[in-house]
Length: 169
Ligand SMILES: [Cu+2]
Image 1: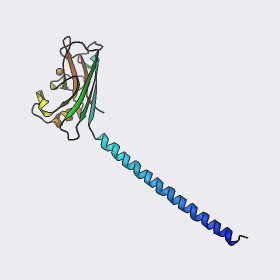
Image 2 (image 1 turned 90 degrees about the vertical axis):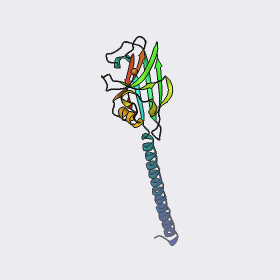
Image 3 (image 1 turned 90 degrees about the horizontal axis):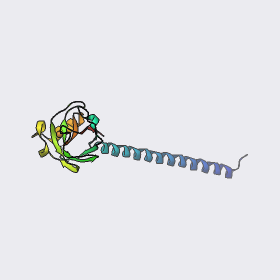
Image 4 (image 1 turned 45 degrees about the vertical axis):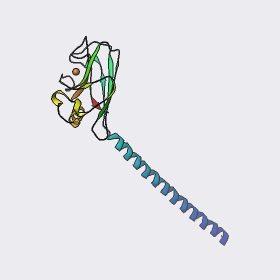
């Protein structure tokens, strides 16, 4: 038969265990809500519009045999007024100029923006051809629709030596 001291100990253990469970639940709720906030931050970062293009001769129409390669990265400023970019080329000889052209994969189209090598930015005043006088959002729409590509022209391939379709990243 239990004495009162043993009952007291059991009661204390029960209270302690209950408090411990409540604490664990509370901590896990905080962890869950923190993860929720992290997810929202990740979503907000995902909302920053970024685009990439991998350039090669085989994407030209018709294809061009060349070792030259290139990458282009684009990132829209949070206010949507500037499209920052970086264009890097390797094994490229006799560079003439580079553009974003309007056009789907496998199709040739008109230039809409001149690009330079390295880091630079595009503002509405840079838009030309079919986008002349239009907004930067009109260019971004082309990029989002997969309806634009980067094209690099050289002395030996004046229609374009390497090209890459621009896609969201
Ligand atoms: Cu061009």
